[in-house]
Length: 186
Image (cartoon, rainbow, N blue to C red; front, side, top):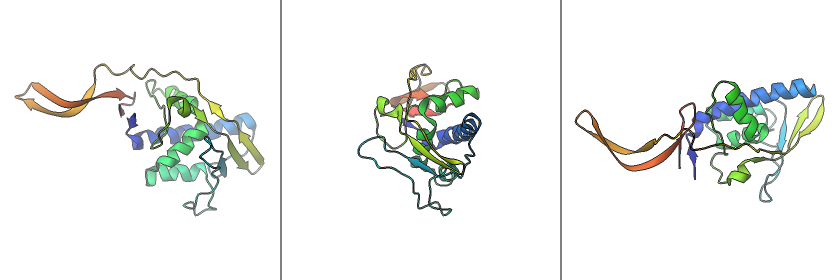
């Protein structure tokens, strides 16, 4: 299983979500905002539709504003996963690449074991905009990410120095590196 330093990548999802709202407003001409209520359809048969968030004291609805708030106040992994589903894997990565972070590789949800194929899928999202409700279609990313592209023999483990120059590394694990120098442990 791959592990991200999750709290570090949450900023990427917040930025991409803001860009997605702007893109929806411009392309569809709707008045969607950070506070527009959203409903997330289930991705798997075990899941159910999510529209309510009891932690949101402003109407108990899921909104991008509240999901971003939870990202940074309590480092909420489920908030990241909802933003991932709202944005989609390809658009999330593309937003980071367009921002100059060409080696970012965001390939999965957090704290939710899913296959690579399942992580490419995002369920439909209903948007309850003031000008009228609409549904964002389910997404299936065809993005092919070369996870080994930035490895270059990087490892992590327990180490110590002998003198000033010789590093002794043991219990090492191979790492994957994100372009913004966040590490993924496999």
